[in-house]
Length: 545
Image 1 (cartoon, rainbow, N blue to C red):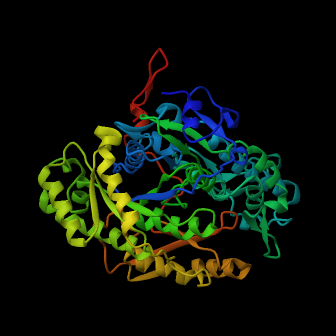
Image 2 (tube, rainbow, N blue to C red):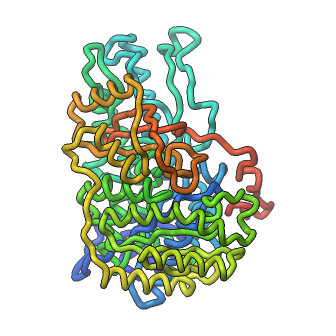
């Protein structure tokens, strides 16, 4: 690794604008960084087909693509999400890329990094404590009706037993007894707010707009009514600053914020992306999971904020093994050659291609190569993409770093320069919330219909009555299927999407719509990644992929 001030100097950031966290990572002061004569860069959004439980290398592809642009003589950076401890110790392990395409220092980024997620957890739980404090002193029907509290607590660890809890038991000194629960920090509205705020003042305003519950007269009660947003902002004063690190090849990388895409909006902060675009010719950013989740939310939530333009191009990551998985192959058989299964599973990629075409953004399918892929399988994917009339490039960044991404980078450059760009949103904001849900479900997921119980429909009408109809919707569902059923692989058709709940994220500026069995607090798998993580007597962390 190179000293972080050398990495910063590559994109014109002086050391005086760095808040150092050791030798290899730093926070930035965006308001101090003056950019003169730099044309705003091109934005490339990396998304994917529906993943397998093992992941398909979207972050690795993003990092390798940024390295490849620099190898081509372009001034390129990447803007990525921060890892959450939940997946790190749970299903996925680390989230800093892999092989020759990764960001450094890996162990520090994957674990505590610069403390942003801890600060978000503390700010969220401060508001939780202030809600219960008000109930303790005012009683069940003071400013807040205890039966209507919507604000939970958060923790950055997968822990299923905390999904539903009872607080305040044990007598009057323990507060008011009531049911509540925990979400994971990456699903917190505070995380979404941090990533969508343009500056500290905007952050404070948005935090004040958090809905915590309702008064006895049914009026909404917000965090500002509890005078909580000032202290919450104080806890986040450093967390709002973007973090700068580097790839193995010395490419500058902004890593900031980490909302989940299957629950929240799934992209890193607009502050980091905006700064990167001012300092670079090309910026590679990623959105979570498949196009029907992360990409849709980037287009219809993030871009609508007005601080980040629509992407100049997209990269749609696919793998031979994910195609075989969606073609019916069991997970332990994915490394066995199976061209018929590749053809069978291509229908999933086909739907993601159709999704990106709808938004009118040029894109390239990146076939992320794994060691077990055969030449015949790779040729079959290329052939199927050619029939679809889409650009496709083999990506070998895991084994070769930036060199293995040059073919992909050149194809992206061609897409930007030659392909039509006619961006459009999925729906107008004036549309009623239920209709917005139906548009997303039918056009992006392939559903025939949407169903919900009366109480959910009434909750949505209540959100509209309170003046929030013009917000975009953020669909929370499984990432493993285009539908709301994680067992429905390939390209499900003729299904009804089941909406189970809805909640208002007034500070973040969207309405969360919960579908199927989605959980906002994940549980650990049978064999969690934490079992493989250890530390040597010398202090070197092992097993952190």
